Image: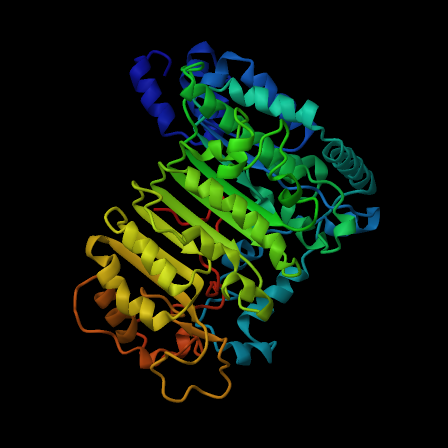
Length: 543
């Protein structure tokens, strides 16, 4: 094969998987040169000493030019006793893979109603689950477990010992030496549901650590006293600052060799007082969020919002602890407001904000809505180039319509999922006139209506409270006449308004719908996801 033309070899390399490319790279110098641009195009990093040093070594080598994408896992190890650590070790196959391998014993079938499934243990899912639970968790010896425990203690110590002026500096300096790095993912493996221990980096670390994010996920506790270090937040701040510094250098023409970061994915869960709330505006080198008043008082200092000035594709997933006070959220949303408004080149935005109940009485000071609404409360166009907007964040109907109207000339794809919008009928009624004339695709699902007033339903059932009214619970893509009529109206195919009075208000499962067309959509082993908007590193939907 070495006798083939280099161009043909390069073409062959492009069709190989990552593992094969790494093996080819070891053959000789020719294959090394051909595969390096593929092997190092996407690298993975976590808050461990060995990973950080490898990142530094790569940045100081000639291979740094090949790096185009960085995935930084911000997960931190929980504090475990040795017994709990041993209990976490689990090398059983993923449950869904186990079921597929034994599909003849546990065939998939249409899922029954939620209430019937809660009161039975003789269904196919329960039998498969019990069989999977009966599998041995591992076959490790005591010596192997002790070695894994030593690795765990070492890694835990490394994370606790993170210093901004040591590890933080290494991270930022290494980033600055990768001129073609234009895409960054700051993600939490624990934000996903399963199979994360098999992901790149984690699968390798798990070989020595013996546990992965899937195994320790349940060991996290809401007790903030047991969450002892803000490593996650420091890593995020380090990289945001590094991006901001690169943007400043580009604007000043002091580093024309580097390309700007244009794609950013950020996952973060605000768990305790050590979270970004305490560091967001006091980052490592005196930077601060960009506000008009702050800028006037601190001329020349670099705002973190500068990290977003060249972003064209932004994905953000933020989750708040239910017990945090509203002023805590308000402070974070104020920072988020500045970040998003600085992203004037934004073309694609995917934003999911998971908060506790947004309509408690103590929120009246925020016009009855959580502060997330303020992000979209504007009288001017914020993103003149935006074409794709996907939201899962509570926004009041009038403010959302006004925002969409301002951006209606450019938005071609709109997705609204699991949102409290207050007045769903009004939103559906006015969307076509507001934005649909330029849309190519639209998707609505689980839009929550506040209060019974405004609904076309004459007598909602007594078991439905005025705060549990969900319209389009099965989405505008559901194969039934009602959903088809809503989508036809929203896309401008017809001027006939849909009859919202037939909406089941979230009271029926997909398979319980008598008007459903086609085979069951919700099966036992592929359960309907309430939060299908959930963002993930590998299973997130994308435009």
